[in-house]
Image 1 (cartoon, rainbow, N blue to C red):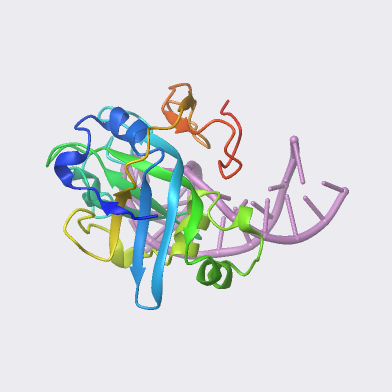
Image 2 (cartoon, protein in one colour; image 1 turned 60 degrees about the horizontal axis):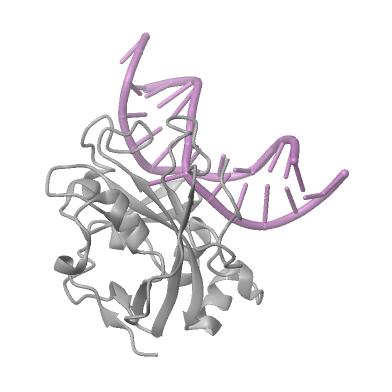
Length: 196
DNA sequence: TTGGCGATTGGCT
DNA sequence: GCCAATCGCCAAT
Protein backbone atom coordinates (compact mmCIF):
# COMPACT_ATOMS: atom_id res chain seq x y z
CA UNK A 1 0.00 0.00 0.00
CA UNK A 2 1.39 3.39 -1.01
CA UNK A 3 0.88 6.25 1.46
CA UNK A 4 0.95 9.76 0.02
CA UNK A 5 1.65 12.88 2.09
CA UNK A 6 -1.31 15.10 2.89
CA UNK A 7 -0.67 18.77 2.15
CA UNK A 8 -2.01 21.65 4.23
CA UNK A 9 -4.33 22.59 1.38
CA UNK A 10 -5.76 19.07 1.59
CA UNK A 11 -6.81 19.49 5.23
CA UNK A 12 -10.33 20.73 6.06
CA UNK A 13 -10.27 24.27 7.48
CA UNK A 14 -12.70 23.53 10.33
CA UNK A 15 -11.54 21.68 13.48
CA UNK A 16 -14.52 19.36 13.76
CA UNK A 17 -14.36 18.53 10.04
CA UNK A 18 -10.65 17.83 10.36
CA UNK A 19 -11.28 15.39 13.22
CA UNK A 20 -13.78 13.49 11.04
CA UNK A 21 -11.58 13.70 7.96
CA UNK A 22 -8.61 12.17 9.75
CA UNK A 23 -10.43 8.89 10.43
CA UNK A 24 -9.02 6.48 7.82
CA UNK A 25 -5.93 8.62 7.18
CA UNK A 26 -2.42 7.71 8.41
CA UNK A 27 0.19 8.91 10.86
CA UNK A 28 3.69 8.12 9.56
CA UNK A 29 6.99 8.47 11.42
CA UNK A 30 10.14 8.01 9.37
CA UNK A 31 12.30 7.05 12.33
CA UNK A 32 16.09 6.71 11.98
CA UNK A 33 15.55 2.96 12.34
CA UNK A 34 12.73 2.68 9.82
CA UNK A 35 9.19 3.62 9.01
CA UNK A 36 6.40 3.39 11.56
CA UNK A 37 2.84 3.93 10.43
CA UNK A 38 -0.74 3.41 11.49
CA UNK A 39 -4.24 4.15 10.27
CA UNK A 40 -6.22 6.65 12.35
CA UNK A 41 -9.36 5.03 13.80
CA UNK A 42 -10.22 7.46 16.63
CA UNK A 43 -9.88 11.23 17.17
CA UNK A 44 -11.29 14.05 19.28
CA UNK A 45 -11.79 17.73 18.40
CA UNK A 46 -10.94 20.54 20.85
CA UNK A 47 -12.47 23.73 19.54
CA UNK A 48 -11.97 27.49 19.96
CA UNK A 49 -14.03 28.59 22.98
CA UNK A 50 -14.23 24.99 24.22
CA UNK A 51 -13.66 24.76 27.99
CA UNK A 52 -11.92 21.40 27.59
CA UNK A 53 -9.40 22.78 25.08
CA UNK A 54 -5.96 23.56 26.49
CA UNK A 55 -6.08 26.86 24.63
CA UNK A 56 -9.25 28.00 26.42
CA UNK A 57 -7.43 30.28 28.90
CA UNK A 58 -5.10 31.71 26.29
CA UNK A 59 -1.64 31.02 25.02
CA UNK A 60 0.99 29.64 27.45
CA UNK A 61 4.44 28.07 27.00
CA UNK A 62 2.91 24.60 26.95
CA UNK A 63 0.03 25.09 24.52
CA UNK A 64 1.69 27.38 21.97
CA UNK A 65 1.58 24.79 19.20
CA UNK A 66 -2.23 24.80 19.27
CA UNK A 67 -2.07 28.37 17.97
CA UNK A 68 -0.02 27.49 14.87
CA UNK A 69 -1.94 27.26 11.58
CA UNK A 70 -3.57 23.90 10.94
CA UNK A 71 -1.31 20.91 10.38
CA UNK A 72 1.26 21.39 13.15
CA UNK A 73 1.91 18.88 15.95
CA UNK A 74 0.98 19.74 19.54
CA UNK A 75 2.61 17.21 21.90
CA UNK A 76 2.16 17.38 25.66
CA UNK A 77 2.54 15.16 28.72
CA UNK A 78 -0.62 13.99 30.48
CA UNK A 79 -0.62 12.63 34.04
CA UNK A 80 3.14 12.92 34.16
CA UNK A 81 3.53 9.75 32.15
CA UNK A 82 1.76 9.74 28.80
CA UNK A 83 2.55 11.83 25.72
CA UNK A 84 -0.40 13.03 23.62
CA UNK A 85 -0.28 13.81 19.89
CA UNK A 86 -2.57 16.50 18.50
CA UNK A 87 -2.88 18.26 15.13
CA UNK A 88 -3.44 22.01 15.27
CA UNK A 89 -6.63 22.73 13.39
CA UNK A 90 -7.38 26.45 12.87
CA UNK A 91 -5.66 29.54 11.49
CA UNK A 92 -2.55 31.12 13.02
CA UNK A 93 -3.37 32.69 16.39
CA UNK A 94 -6.49 30.58 17.01
CA UNK A 95 -5.99 27.81 19.59
CA UNK A 96 -7.61 24.49 18.66
CA UNK A 97 -6.60 20.95 17.84
CA UNK A 98 -7.47 17.33 17.12
CA UNK A 99 -6.24 14.62 19.50
CA UNK A 100 -5.18 11.35 17.83
CA UNK A 101 -6.56 8.67 20.16
CA UNK A 102 -5.91 5.37 18.37
CA UNK A 103 -4.24 3.89 15.30
CA UNK A 104 -4.45 0.55 13.53
CA UNK A 105 -0.86 -0.79 13.11
CA UNK A 106 0.44 -0.87 9.52
CA UNK A 107 4.25 -0.65 9.21
CA UNK A 108 7.08 -1.08 11.74
CA UNK A 109 5.17 -3.46 14.00
CA UNK A 110 8.33 -5.16 15.34
CA UNK A 111 9.74 -1.79 16.46
CA UNK A 112 6.39 -0.87 18.04
CA UNK A 113 6.41 -4.15 19.97
CA UNK A 114 9.89 -3.42 21.32
CA UNK A 115 8.98 0.11 22.38
CA UNK A 116 5.74 -0.99 24.01
CA UNK A 117 7.17 -4.09 25.63
CA UNK A 118 4.32 -6.27 24.40
CA UNK A 119 3.62 -8.52 21.45
CA UNK A 120 -0.12 -7.97 21.67
CA UNK A 121 -1.05 -6.25 18.41
CA UNK A 122 -4.19 -4.75 19.88
CA UNK A 123 -2.24 -2.99 22.66
CA UNK A 124 0.35 -1.28 20.45
CA UNK A 125 -1.54 1.83 19.31
CA UNK A 126 -4.90 1.67 21.15
CA UNK A 127 -4.92 4.80 23.34
CA UNK A 128 -3.29 8.23 22.94
CA UNK A 129 -0.39 7.55 25.32
CA UNK A 130 0.30 4.12 23.87
CA UNK A 131 0.48 5.28 20.27
CA UNK A 132 3.06 7.99 20.95
CA UNK A 133 5.22 5.48 22.82
CA UNK A 134 4.98 2.88 20.03
CA UNK A 135 5.59 5.41 17.25
CA UNK A 136 8.54 7.09 18.98
CA UNK A 137 6.80 10.46 19.12
CA UNK A 138 8.17 12.67 21.92
CA UNK A 139 8.43 16.33 22.95
CA UNK A 140 10.93 17.02 20.16
CA UNK A 141 7.96 16.98 17.81
CA UNK A 142 5.98 19.65 19.66
CA UNK A 143 5.40 22.53 17.26
CA UNK A 144 6.70 20.86 14.12
CA UNK A 145 4.91 21.21 10.79
CA UNK A 146 3.32 17.92 9.72
CA UNK A 147 3.00 19.21 6.15
CA UNK A 148 6.57 20.33 5.39
CA UNK A 149 8.15 17.06 4.23
CA UNK A 150 9.62 16.16 7.65
CA UNK A 151 9.93 12.85 9.49
CA UNK A 152 6.47 12.96 11.09
CA UNK A 153 3.55 13.40 8.70
CA UNK A 154 -0.07 12.69 7.83
CA UNK A 155 -0.84 10.49 4.85
CA UNK A 156 -3.57 8.99 2.71
CA UNK A 157 -3.90 5.96 0.45
CA UNK A 158 -6.78 7.56 -1.40
CA UNK A 159 -9.14 4.92 -0.03
CA UNK A 160 -12.84 5.72 0.26
CA UNK A 161 -13.76 7.53 3.49
CA UNK A 162 -14.81 4.96 6.12
CA UNK A 163 -17.98 5.12 8.20
CA UNK A 164 -17.51 7.48 11.16
CA UNK A 165 -19.47 7.45 14.43
CA UNK A 166 -19.35 10.11 17.12
CA UNK A 167 -19.70 10.21 20.90
CA UNK A 168 -18.70 12.28 23.91
CA UNK A 169 -14.99 12.78 24.51
CA UNK A 170 -13.18 10.52 26.97
CA UNK A 171 -11.78 11.46 30.38
CA UNK A 172 -13.06 15.04 30.62
CA UNK A 173 -14.73 16.86 33.48
CA UNK A 174 -15.40 20.11 31.63
CA UNK A 175 -17.55 20.27 28.46
CA UNK A 176 -18.01 16.54 28.94
CA UNK A 177 -21.27 16.25 27.00
CA UNK A 178 -20.16 17.62 23.63
CA UNK A 179 -20.17 15.05 20.81
CA UNK A 180 -16.66 15.66 19.54
CA UNK A 181 -15.12 12.19 19.56
CA UNK A 182 -14.99 10.38 16.22
CA UNK A 183 -14.19 6.75 15.48
CA UNK A 184 -14.62 3.98 12.96
CA UNK A 185 -17.43 1.80 14.30
CA UNK A 186 -16.56 -1.86 14.73
CA UNK A 187 -12.83 -1.35 14.40
CA UNK A 188 -11.09 -3.38 17.16
CA UNK A 189 -8.27 -0.82 17.46
CA UNK A 190 -10.62 1.89 18.75
CA UNK A 191 -9.88 2.52 22.45
CA UNK A 192 -13.51 2.12 23.55
CA UNK A 193 -16.59 1.07 21.64
CA UNK A 194 -18.54 4.12 22.74
CA UNK A 195 -18.34 7.31 24.76
CA UNK A 196 -20.42 8.39 27.75
C1' DT B 1 6.60 29.48 45.85
C1' DT B 2 3.06 26.07 46.06
C1' DG B 3 -0.64 22.66 45.63
C1' DG B 4 -4.49 20.92 43.05
C1' DC B 5 -5.40 18.81 38.98
C1' DG B 6 -5.48 16.32 34.81
C1' DA B 7 -7.42 14.92 26.85
C1' DT B 8 -3.89 7.93 30.94
C1' DT B 9 -2.23 3.53 31.81
C1' DG B 10 -1.57 -0.98 33.85
C1' DG B 11 -2.39 -4.03 37.43
C1' DC B 12 -5.59 -6.23 40.31
C1' DT B 13 -10.47 -7.72 41.84
C1' DG C 1 -14.62 -2.11 36.91
C1' DC C 2 -11.78 0.22 40.30
C1' DC C 3 -7.72 2.65 41.73
C1' DA C 4 -3.01 4.27 42.52
C1' DA C 5 1.14 6.12 40.27
C1' DT C 6 3.20 10.19 38.50
C1' DC C 7 4.85 15.01 37.45
C1' DG C 8 4.52 19.27 34.67
C1' DC C 9 1.60 23.14 34.43
C1' DC C 10 -0.35 27.27 36.03
C1' DA C 11 -3.61 30.00 38.97
C1' DA C 12 -3.47 31.72 43.30
C1' DT C 13 -0.89 32.94 47.23
